[in-house]
Every structure is written in C-alpha cells, then in structure tokens.
Length: 479
Image (cartoon, rainbow, N blue to C red; front, side, top):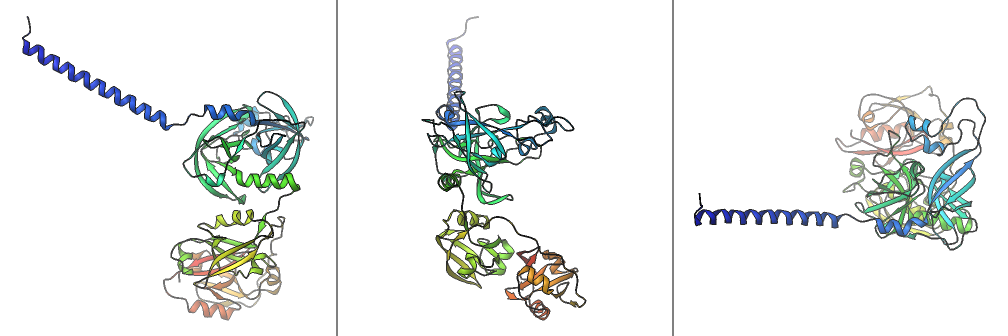
C-alpha cells in the first residue's frame, strides 16, 4: 500500500535524526580516543635513542660452596619464589664447587667507558663483563664502590667513543611523573617497563643518607643498576631495590636519585673514595604530641635526641631537645630530609641551622665534618642496685650505676627499674630505660625525677627523653 507524503516525510525525518545521532556518538567516541591517545606517552623514540647506552653486566665470583652457576647473586635470588630459585640453578648439598655468576644492569655515563651500576651487582666479583646492545662483550674493571648508597663505578677496558646517556636532575622530579626503566630482568636483555613516580625523598631502614625515588615501575632481579628515565630521555635514577612479600614485583620499587649517584661517581673517579658530610646528632620525627609538648604549631623539623661527643653539632652548640627547622635555608618537614642534606654538604663546608629551643628560635652556624666509618658497640647490661625508690607515673626508678653512666657517657639521669600501669607505660617507657629529661627539665637524681613528675601539668603532652640501648629518643607522655 503506497505511503502518504506525510508518512514518508516523518520516516525521513526520523532517519535524518538517527543518522545525526550516530554521527555525533561516533565523533564523540573518536574524540575521546584521540584525547586518551594524546594523554599517554609514546616511549618508542626514548627507547630507541637510549638503549645503546644501557648495558648488561655479568660477573663471576669465587665459589662459596653452597650454590653453583647462579645467574643472580644471593640477594637477588632470595627475592624470588622457591620455584624460581630452583629453576635458576640453586643446589644444596655436596658437590664440586664451581664459580658463581650474577647479572644486573648498568649504563654508560662517559664516552671513554665509565659505567654506573649497583654495588650489590658487582660485590665480590673477580671478573666483570659488560655486554652492549650491539652484542659486543667487553671486560670491565671495578673503579670503586660506595656500599652506603649502593653505587659502583666500572670502567670498560679499551672503551672509546661509546654511546652515553643524558644525565638529568632528580631534584626536579615530582610525584605523578612518567618514568621508564631499561634493564635485564631475569636475564631478558633490554626489557622496557614504565610507570610513574610514586613518591620522592623516601628514607629506607637500610640507609637514611639516600632520599630514594619510589616508583611503580616493574623492577625485578636483573634490573638492579639500570637507569630510570624521565620523558625527556634523561636519567634521573638508578634502579636499586624492590619491596616484596612474594619474591616478585608488587608495585613498589626504589631508585637512587641521579644527583646523589653522580656525586658519588665524581668522588670515586677523582679520589677513589667517598666522603659525606656529618653533623653528629641522633634525630627523630616530630609527631603531633611532640609538637604540642615543644610548642610547635604543627609537626615538622628534626628533633635532636642526642648530640655526639666531639661532633660538629656539639662544637656548634646544638643541644638535645633542639628542633632543627631549617638547614641552610631549606625547610625540614620530615626528620628524614635532614641526613641527605647534611650528606651532600662538602666536608669542611659550613651551614646555618634554624633551631627551636625552649620556645625561642635561634640560628646556629656549623662546620660540617666527615661521616665516620660505621661501627660501635652496645652498652653492657647492668644489674639492679639494692636501693630503689618508688615514684609517680607508675615508675620505680633508681640512680644510674656508675659503670653504665660511664658506658653511656652521661651525667645524672635515673634508670627505670619497673613500669606499672600509668602514663609512663602508655608512653612506651620500658624497664632499663635511662630518663635524662622530663618536660624539658634535666633529671640528675631520683629527687629531681620525683619533683619533675609531681609538677607536671594535667592532661597536657609532655616530652620525656630516654636512653635505650645506647640511643637517645624522645617519648610523649600525658599525665
């Protein structure tokens, strides 16, 4: 049956509207895809331009008697699940000892063959082979290492006109930036992984002089020592550590900032050793309660728990209980920010500290010394003296035995003999702690302790300085 002109017109209008709607949706979807594509970086040129300066490093060590032919060192291997440990050749029990092998990554920083990598990649190596992207395998010598920062410097023998990376500035990095790693995880050469900077200035328990870059770039055994690039193709870090509970990558990786690594490189290349600045204080974080007890309007700075004898800090007049708010004009938000600042200061250089002491702000000038080698001993255990005294706050205290006082290098103080229920227990004070200060008042005797404890304000945070296992720390107590 023929349709009327009206029906045909209505159908045609609907068709036009439907076509327009489809065209609009298609355009919108295409535009969204284009925007998404523009929002994601393209790493192909970066990889092509920089892969030539990234190297694979294989080492040979003397046999230890408990493994044979491992492609990773023990530190790297222990990060793997047990199945992979067996797969990569771990063998126990009797058998002929053979040389051990490990592998990692590195990158060339000078055309004459200087290479940066991790110390743990080459530690104990008797032979080092560097493999380039063009498959050349060249022997390398170990120029020097810095275990504290986990940086090692190699020199390719007969290196000449080699490709080099462009070194950037890690101090300019911000959380959220795209970064890319090139390395040899599990022996797969020139593997590229990408992600973002998760955080900067991370202080790890193993090392507080390196403000690590935290990323979510996939890093696995074999990536160690490889470069971390920004989108400009500049190296901003050396991939060094991962956090893992399973042995595999879990989204948390750490890189050594290139500013720190290059400082180490120049010192090793020029002098063969690394010297770091040293202030000579034990510090701790300022939490909300400590900030209140010291009169700060918000938690910030580095609280000095102890000043070491004969240190630059002592010479400058720093005291336990001072809060360092600024170092050479740079504000200190977290206490972990101070050690890297001091470490970067040249030995013999000077710095100005802005310090809060007793509610007042003062300036101190300090001449930075050289960080001594690690070492030292813990104080010996002491027995309880026959005479003790009960005191408020749920504590029983006594005079510090002379032998312990000499070991700790202190005068006065009282030793905690027993901790009962009360504010002290809630504050974390333990038996054998030595209390040297309460609410900014020095404690030289049991009588001083009793007087200070009885005069504390009600329901207000007060600081208590204790020495525990040879180290001073501040606790917060609410009477």
